[in-house]
Image 1 (cartoon, one colour):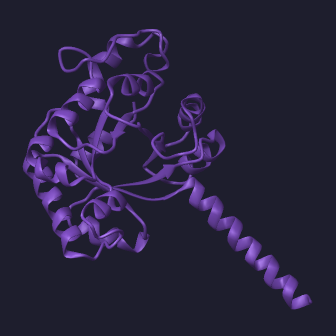
Image 2 (spheres, one colour):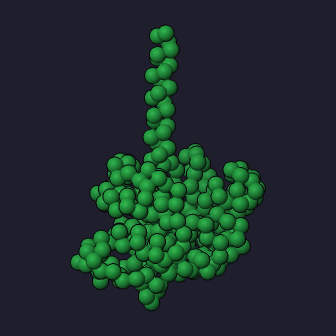
Image 3 (tube, one colour):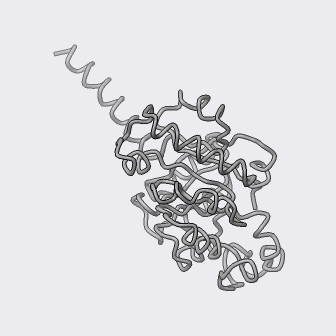
Length: 257
């Protein structure tokens, strides 16, 4: 397993990126581009469960740690992506500490959780490394709980204190919408919420993450103590690159005309 959890505990700031296209090719390109971690998005991405294995295989040959965002805190979804070899799981739309507890329980085997045992899976080298994998899950698998609801803000201390919750990850789009300030990251309500999340995480000895819309905001959030910082997505890179090139070509064409 890649050592993202150890790096966070040491205080390192880690730069990441979203993978939305369900493509093993773009996964490999992005994973080889210098990011510390990437997140395969099964909640909003265009890829299906059947695409996940190929993306994880492609990322295995890159320096980037592979995390996966599942659609819910149901343990069956979490088991599946971990068995395929994800290094950690992000769980969205958590409202209560009880939901966060259920999500984390799905990551770990008994007695630390309720994850079902399957030895002949990719994560364990198809049985070859099961004992070492099982023993190392608490130290190696990253449990990321998204804070993007008003209800979660009310239970931050309880969520952060849960064993196995390693990162409180801020979802700016959903959180600002929940706060009634859709997309306004400069609003006092959002700023206060970010500070509250960082305070709860620090108190519990946990890390904080965020998805940025603008890379120029990196230093601002890093100065607040946020370590797991993502910006960009494979879909964004393709769309922006295609639009930029089409614009240049159309500009040249119009000049000729």
